[in-house]
Length: 291
Ligand code: NAP
Image (cartoon, rainbow, N blue to C red; front, side, top):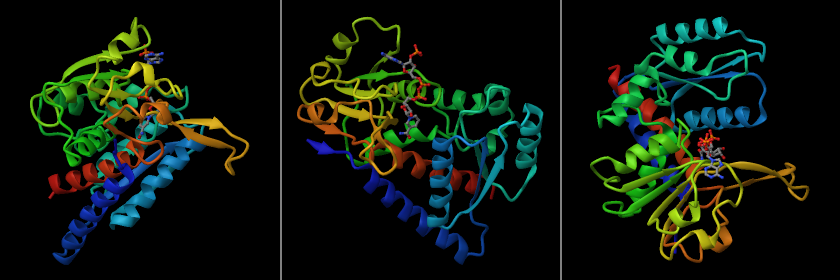
């Protein structure tokens, strides 16, 4: 069994980006600039945005964090987005989700200039992805592809089962694994909460990508020998023995599933760090496209 070490691979990617940024600086070029908008005080969202800003600093990007109060109206947020769209200094920006209930998330994501949409959530970019056109691929699916690629995991002709159909992970992942090319050329089954007999489906899978957010959902008896297991789940489970009062748990019963798997991602240290690395990659791409 091989651990797909997202921490190591993401550090390699960050080192590669750092080198590219040094070259840009040496040529007197502007370095990539990422902005992150966060509305409200959600603890997990603040942690994610903080990690993204720190990652920018590490590779030599400029970064801007835009913090707005929990009572921000939709119009105020749309105005801020327009400002970022027009600001030539910003190459790409993200709106950290979830947004407070008074704000329509779809409306907000559609207001982002597609050329600065480094999360790849705008319908124009999602459509391009589905049509195999060059675009920003959402960071988490992009990170999974990169991990499979760097470990040389064969996907052609394999049966890939994706659990969860969110717009940011499961749905794009199912499209990407089924597209022509590598990683891709899989036969894909997309499952969700209405799927019947899910164990029958997962136990036939060569590759399982689990993105539902239910701790330890995927058990050893749901997995065939030598399957490749990608665990996207990140759930904070209360734990009094931990200094933070919680531990991060994935969707996969790692202890038992890892005994059967050929490759498996740990949580933490698997898909999570890859997501941040690929956001940086998309931001670099956005800068290059604006040159
Ligand atoms: P989400 O919006 O939370 O949706 C969950 C999906 O799982 C839905 O499609 C739902 O089906 C499906 N589902 C729920 N219970 C199920 C069941 N018993 N059997 C089969 N499918 C079931 O999804 P998300 O935003 O992609 O998040 C999923 C998990 O990934 C979360 O833990 C999240 O924190 C994590 N995540 C991690 C990263 C990372 O960087 N590692 C990035 C993003 C998300 P329905 O559509 O029918 O409701």
